[in-house]
Image (cartoon, rainbow, N blue to C red):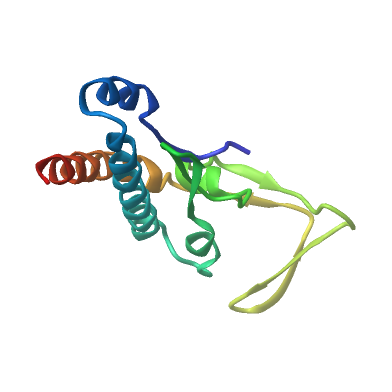
Length: 144
């Protein structure tokens, strides 16, 4: 499955700013990125569809380093939810039949034609909002 995540890393920008503004800039930018990453996590979660709640609960912002963050989910179905899936046939993994519940009771089938799913794009929809928030947070930080 496809890995889906949003990464924030401004280490090159920090090096340039540190030369201008001194070592305290890295501390300020680290705090700004932490705030942005947590905002980003909430934003992605807000765009995530809910069926059982497991996907929403799995989306976390994780620190990659002092100036890097990653917002992602370890669940194997995050890719098809983000990007969608084409129509496909589902076959049993073991045994001869699929078994599932329908409105009329228990159904057994050798295969099922899945119509595919539409892309939900919760990570892609979040990126512009995260970028705008990072700009706002850095502007507030620099105004102090």
